Length: 215
Image (tube, rainbow, N blue to C red; front, side, top):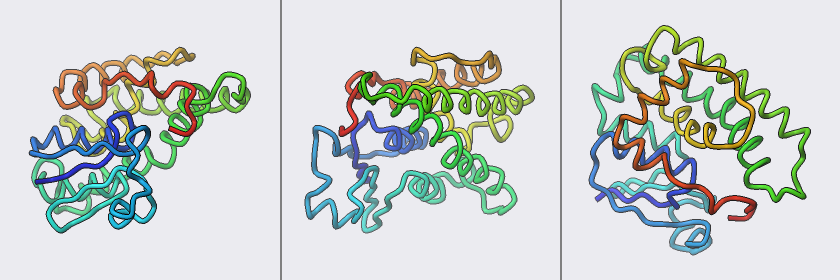
């Protein structure tokens, strides 16, 4: 059976569990990281020498790094739905996945969520947080323009393109921060909320992370 290592409150673990849910894969979830520990154990380091989650074990196959895991699961279990053999079609998905990891995720997860929510108030860099919030506003306006003409990032159906960016939506709209008017992003978020796997794995309370830099 597929094993997924990582705590459910981890942003990157949530990406993986969301796809596992969309694919309907039987799996064993093994909590790790944060209060669960395990990451420095020799047995875990044998799976991922970097000591980070998520990690999956699929029989004899071990994969770490969330984006690599998403692509592996899609290629192995999602042919025709989440994976195409056409390089041109895959490139349409890959560009959004890479954009999410190199642009949106650093500004939102690192700059806003870590800088604002996970940093104790006395230690916050308010100037840096404001810059990150402004950059996030630009990112979501860009998404809004794309989603004005189609329900998902690559067209009519959910693809891997939606998962990395979509994972940020629950936290983004729950935080007490300034946000731009992005009605098409809001409609996209509402469509994602209609999906059981999104509700189960993404829309989770995250108060355990408030003010905790070392969790």
